[in-house]
Amino acid sequence: MYSELESGPLRPLAQQFVGLARTLLVARTVDDVLHRVVDAARQAIAGADIVSMTLRLPDGGYTTPVVTEPAAARLDEVQYRIDKGPCIDATRASGKGVAMSEDLTADPRWPEIGRVAAEVGVGAVLCTGILPDSDPPRFGALNIYSHRPGGLLDADQDIALLLATHAALALATTEARTAGQLREAQLREALDSRDVIGQAKGILMLRRGIGATEAFELLRNRSQELNIKLADVARTLAANRTDL
Image (cartoon, rainbow, N blue to C red; front, side, top):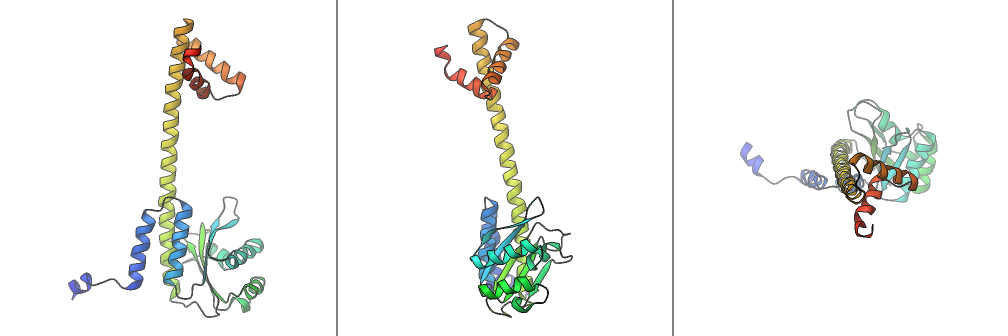
């Protein structure tokens, strides 16, 4: 029985998450990760008519970098302005970090948000913090809106939690990869600068019959006079050695 289940085809939802995991593995930027997670939410949750992502800024504010419709951006913005609402609560709530309303237009917790929801035609909302089950404040939230009151189910919370977990892991991997690439680029730049400064020193030593220390002082003084990086002065000198 176990081998038959193991070898059988994946159910549609499992297939979607396997596909999401594969696409997130090749995502190169934070923006790419967010777009892929938002697309997956619309496909995996039947009532997900509009989806957005909230990210918390270093200064404690919030922004919406990815949204499928302007209505979600407007709802997110009013929450950021008044500093409360489902997407804010999802980043601050303990436990799973889930905030949900079956009828946002009539929810007594957020009357100002409800008025905007009625204007833009949004009924229900489900927000999940990223990373679920971590200590708040979390660094963002996945926001799922439905046009219909009751359009999002309690069972959709499990799917949203899985999506938020995928998003958190992919974001952490992407940021680490980006940081590694930046460090590699900085190292390459440092090595290139060291090489070209060495070339320029050698040219000055040969042409002027001076020592390495004096050649370096000439380069540094010229850099300060022109307000140009030392490596750029050295690069210009090395490129025009025949004109000296």
